[in-house]
Length: 240
Image (cartoon, rainbow, N blue to C red; front, side, top):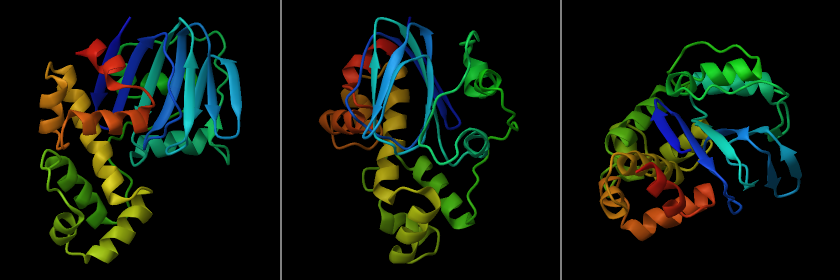
């Protein structure tokens, strides 16, 4: 059972029987068991034999699954809906174990990508807003520029800072402050999303790497491994 979807800052993946190395990425992540249980390891805690978990952005973690089927949901933390979810579920902890015993997850693509199903199983309320909650309009404009020009290999901090009328130093500081991630790391995150979509649309790794602005397929593989803890060939070939 393999399924994948990505739209407006939300992605999901359904896969069977694998585990990852320790990794971290920019998204708020939820994992739900459709069949079986799994374990999550962070740098200082282990959560064994669970059926659901929420993990805050940029938290190193390792997923250990058995032969079961698992749903992974990734949400860009700048989305207003993501902030609403975080505010209702997370306090000071980086990892949240929901109590959803007995609830069956609806894996319909539309409800997952709109986060309606996630809100239902977690018993929370979210507004249907796809906008970003970024307080500085210049950084919001910068994100639009990055996503529009993500295929360009020479997309640089200098180029984007000039487009939003900020000095490089001021832009670097403000971007990290607003997004919680350095500019270069955020660009890699966006390139990776682009590459995943391209592979799902039947491009091979080399074509997807080139079209999303990576130096080559090896560069794409390294970044994928760093951010998801698993070789892209283990996942992307299944959704291609």
